[in-house]
Image 1 (cartoon, helix red, strand yellow):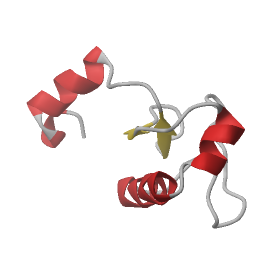
Image 2 (tube, rainbow, N blue to C red; image 1 turned 90 degrees about the vertical axis):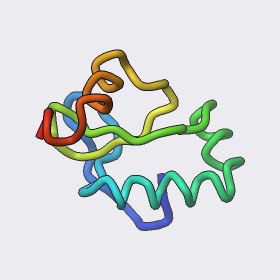
Image 3 (spheres, rainbow, N blue to C red; image 1 turned 90 degrees about the horizontal axis):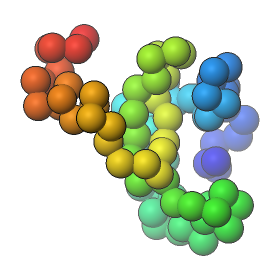
Image 4 (cartoon, helix red, strand yellow; image 1 turned 135 degrees about the vertical axis):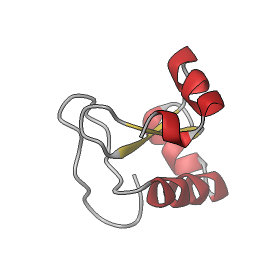
Length: 81
């Protein structure tokens, strides 16, 4: 998705993998600055990042937080790390 060349993809989700939360957020911010190419290519705009339970990488998504993610967020990072 980004200007940083080819990236690994998650074998289960098929999404681009980012090595860290910060790296994924950086890409999300870059997309928000110039959304048209991404929106035209995908048909939607990514809105948040999440950690993948399969590959342990970070992905971009357009969906809102799931009930499980909201519960983990309320409990704090120590509860799920």
